[in-house]
Length: 303
Image 1 (cartoon, rainbow, N blue to C red):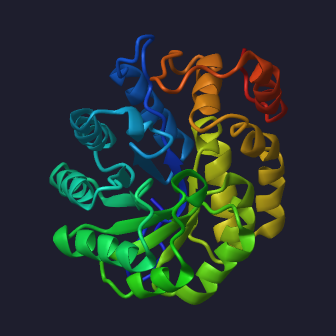
Image 2 (cartoon, rainbow, N blue to C red; image 1 turned 180 degrees about the vertical axis):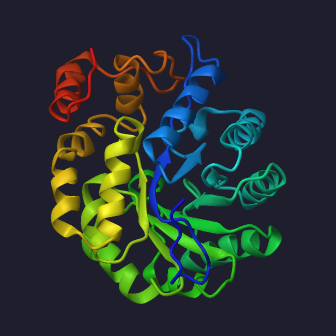
Image 3 (cartoon, rainbow, N blue to C red; image 1 turned 60 degrees about the vertical axis):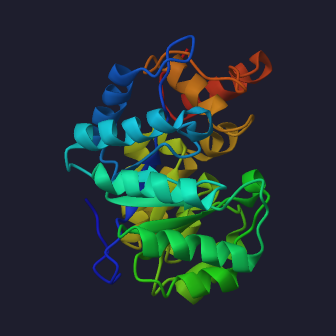
């Protein structure tokens, strides 16, 4: 695995795949398909896996399914790459529970989304993340995605949280390049900044981000790993050349809410079944050609 020796908190670098949760029709979790995806990621050079995050449909899983899938992922990976468990909640007590369970089951780190729906103040956000960090001794990565949560973690709050020893990184999914650059400039010596917007991965890694927590990595794991490695090595020309082949995928895997398009794409690639849980439904037919074209333009066989 790649690790950045300049980062005192020892966080993983590179392409961290935000893996889907395969399901059979009817919504039952398909563990054999999940295992095949894990092996594909490992063989493709993915540098770490994020399980039960947004792309993993954490919002549609029961609490027990959530915990069980973390445990299953850790056992399947068996130390071959870091496992980062999504353990965030809009309820601090539940986030504490998920984070403690992830540690107990052997996760390497946790990814904690800002509390959705409750709309806390910045003071409340600071206390939320501080409470979880002090309550569970495991590396923790903040996750800011205001487009989904309607809750934006300010730069000032991130700066304050960066002084807590086991808060080791932040996934910036604001989609704002300037915001990402500010995070790197202000907090990059204390936190690993991970890009959470695939279209900005290359630019932000070249600017000092430690990697990407990527949806695109689900369908193009080898290409994403290679792009991240080149960007981390400072090879802007090489990294951009690889990234250019993925631009349509970066864009078109978000024609509907994630993970609807990426799960449909993986089904078309023959890697998972077509299952998804309500209130999410299968990708609308009007987007089928667009997603297939994005895959085909990147040299990915589908359909």
